[in-house]
Length: 219
Image 1 (tube, rainbow, N blue to C red):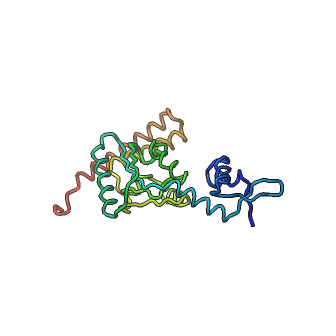
Image 2: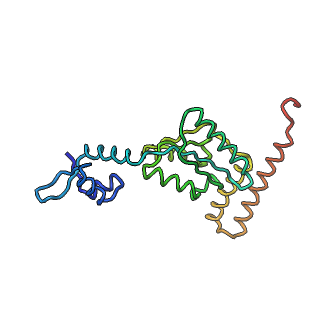
């Protein structure tokens, strides 16, 4: 039978050693004692303690919405209304709403980081997003698996692969090119600037050609 020291047990639970000592004194979770008086804990105690922690800290349902620029404020409002209506239709109570304005490639978004912190502290039961790319552009499955390890489900209202406006996708692509151009040639070199310029021109040209295409009924 595996026995944990008080420090190991505290790390498993994400609580302090003093909290475990208090639980022991209060009779909430009485530790085993070695012949020398040291506290030890079993796996069964771990499950019981996780139950105690859960009851003391009910998990939240969080809505998360994102747009890429400040000019998309109305899009952000529409996104939030869509999520609220979805939750209401499912009878899901909402505990917190988090929003960000920034690229899906930017994993340093303020409220994205806040959300990740809440999840890894075991505070969130469900995260609801309109589309996968509202959370992250790449690596959604990684975050889905990571959140699940902390008992959190990511509920995607619409599983369509691509919900981003063309301009947002274009800017994300340019950001990727800028990053790798800087790695290859240096941030301010002529070659890096030229590569980024060529990509911008190619994207703009593709957009112009798309706009000039006749509608299906005109073909």
